[in-house]
Amino acid sequence: MPNLALGRIDPLTLTLAPKSQGIATPSISPLLVAVLQTFPEPVYLKDRSHRWVMVNEAYCDYMGHESEALLGKCEGDMLPEREASLAWENDEAVFKTGSSTLNEAVAARDDKTARLLQTHKSILRDGDDNELLLCVIRDLTGSDAASDLLQGGPAGDDKPALRGQTKIRRLGEQSVRFAFSDPLTQLPDRRAFMNLLDVAAARVAASSAIFVINIDHLKLVNDRFGHSAGDTVILEVARRLRASIRANDILGRLDSDEFIVLADAIDSMQTDRIADQILANIVDPLQLGQHEYRISVSVGIAMFSGHRHNAEELVRNARMAASWCKRRNRGGSEFYSDGASAAAERMATIELKLPIALEQGELVVHYQPIVSSRKRNVSGFEALARWNDSDLGELFPQEFIPIAEDMGIVRKLGQMIIDRACEFTASLANRRLSVTVNVSGSQLMDETFPIFVAETLQKYDLAGSRLFFEITESVAMKADASVWQVFEELATIGVRLVIDDFGTGFSNLARLKELPFVAIKIDRDFIRDLPNSPQDRAIFRAMHAMAKELNLKTVAEGIENALQEEFVAGFGVDYFQGYRFGHPMPANKLKRYTKS
Ligand code: C2E
Ligand code: MG
Ligand code: MG
Image (cartoon, rainbow, N blue to C red):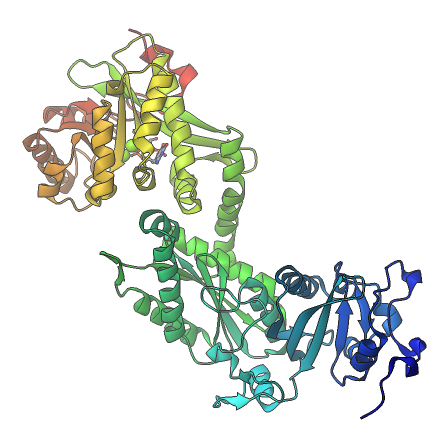
């Protein structure tokens, strides 16, 4: 046992940050420093500002820098940005919690070779009671387990790591604990995955694929069933994804409702097969408390072959394909292609700009006249959202409402429309005129919605009878007890409900009878080819007869010409709406329609 008595240590051999580097030299026992110096493993000490205050020789070798270059600096000064910020956050977590951590992570060095690192970090206090972070690094790259892990070798059984108690298995089995794993699923989170992808991109020669799997309507699940139900869905999706991909494929969690898979050495046919397998496994119903819930996901895929793409670009492409898929083919899968990218780019721009536009009042409301067939006068207006953006041009609700829904801002948008529509209607001299506003399913799931409506009516001193809400047939048919409650509360303040786009869903007649609606709007799809199309004539006749049977008023949408008008009027339709009677237009262009 060597004598490590204090007096025998030459302070000059200690690699501590000197005063001249502008940081306080920590008062650490020279004995401790000497011990750390002799460690064969890389060791460092950092101060609370994350600056190295002591580094041993092994750490200098490992970093490829002299101690003078490191002392007083942070990782941010020496390492690529992402790696540095990973390290910073990891260290910060140790400082904040004060508890020791043992992590394994795959990291890429300058030469792009992958290393498997095990780091042990803990907090020490120096003589002045300042916190210092002690880190010991074990480089497990040379171990058998690590070479399996990093080179994608044959699947193996558990192999003990070279040192330490942690068992390391293949990455494909997700049993390596990542420095930044998602706490819920234990999968690598975005940063860990991106780091890993950098490593993979550097060594993958054959083609690989990235899948981004986006859970549809997760926000609705959280809102309706609570966050623990949302967590159940996420965990179940993770489980089903793992069961759908190959043992060597790597699964990670990219975002709250987004998973990512890296599949190495794969062709497009195998890629297709995995996407199909994911979709097939995901559809099984899941029990959420009393409810049976069907999960749906949209899958975006980007393929790459080695050097052509960097990791970030690939992930971006796969995400774009997923959000493209969400609009066009929800519940399916889409490959990224350059052709689709322009549209996806536009969508991404909308996602970026929409919340700001909403905040800054760039969304406006246009009004389209609704005409009584009996009196041939305007009975009211439908409020339709519009957005004119300097880059994107004029946008129609069909494009931005679904995006607002996905982003969870449709309630706010809807409130703005209701507010404007009530203000507009209250300003009309003719008190017979009413306004109808489209409301989406998620607005109805908000139990405070009727309160907001009542307050808005009061704000503008508008009678509830002058406001109608249009609800699409498919949303109306799905109404559950809580939505039903909202319907009833709206009825008590005098607001009436209309079924929009009638004929496009699969209405259950008995259900239709129960719902508190006063009118149906026959979708313009069924009007367009009237009176020439025999099928549409028959459909129109049947729908109209059914509405009358149920004692509902009827509105024919999309009337563009005299022949259409004549045909629907012949059946006794109550109201017309369409370009023949007026386009949607801003409030200040409506003077000729609003005279008493
Ligand atoms: P919708 O409620 O069925 O609205 C009627 C749509 O048909 C409007 O399109 C209107 O401009 C269009 N239209 C009216 N007359 C004619 C015609 O004679 N010919 C043709 N070809 N089209 C006609 P718009 O404004 O693009 O709205 C599309 C849909 O977006 C609406 O369908 C509605 O479901 C939804 N929407 C619009 N505004 C809002 C809103 O504020 N909130 C919500 N949640 N949805 C909205
Ligand atoms: Mg409508
Ligand atoms: Mg409609």
